[in-house]
Image 1 (cartoon, rainbow, N blue to C red):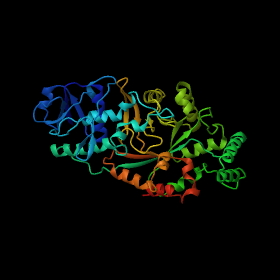
Image 2: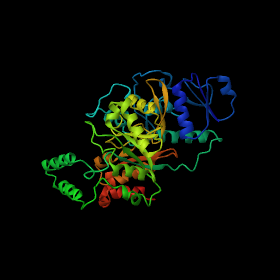
Image 3: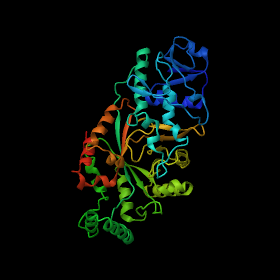
Length: 430
């Protein structure tokens, strides 16, 4: 048991200390504000306060974890050896910055509760993030801090033994926003595609559309029968998220009454874990729409669905996660940027979301997303696999997971000679 002393125990302190010690370092933890109990304890311990009690392992605290509500924070870039940090305290201490306050700031997405600039789609602009400004967006910075902190603990307390089985893991999510590109769609939808391709002089798409409609070519999005082949030589088994909602003015979808589509979902559920990809409309009309989508999907699959991903990404952090929590989802896979590679919350380790506006931890576990198909295609890099491999090799903890999101269209077997597809095949192969 590791004991932590602090002069005041707050919900924020309980949350972040438990996450770092128990979820990331796998060390049992107790917290006290009783000086006598702390002094008498003979096991591994540290104090977290304004000043040390004696010569114990000490981390000087920033005010953030003792505050309530949203207060503007002054952030300045410093370094802990080679690692960028903020909330610097004093270079003479074991840890020269408040690792707990800094980690809480990133995990809670504190900056997204402050006024911020939005993109044209209404999302948080990643260029405004501290991780972009301080140039550590592509680093699992919290995991790296904690790994360095772990080495300090091991060197100071012989009772703590660093685990050797610290190998991080990889995860692939497959999302299906549209099951078919041309087949199994209405005449009007295909006519609209035809006119659009003609207007853009996209003759390649026109030819593919015609060949698919006269059944001389497979639909490029209908790749489901080839998924086993894709992951046949990999220990990674993808998790699949289906959009199961009627079309709206916000988004074109595959009809939930389409027989082929329903059969695909059921068959996929026999081999892979399923989750719900919510519609754009669900984030706008959340009270009724998301519950309808969840119930329809559960009725079709005959299973309770706890895993969810927002197809429009996180638009309003507090509102979106409150919506998922109230609809009894347990695991969210949206914590990332749709068009930018990197760790939005500064970590690769799954964690429970803390709502700083209500000072409350939700029973909703977030799995951070490092890259999406869109962000990989936007990279100015002919070999994105190298970036993925480098990011994976950088993960320092067993709790760290490199999670990548692809779509069903990406797994078109006709594209296996495409450079990006070959890179992903190499990445998932053992």
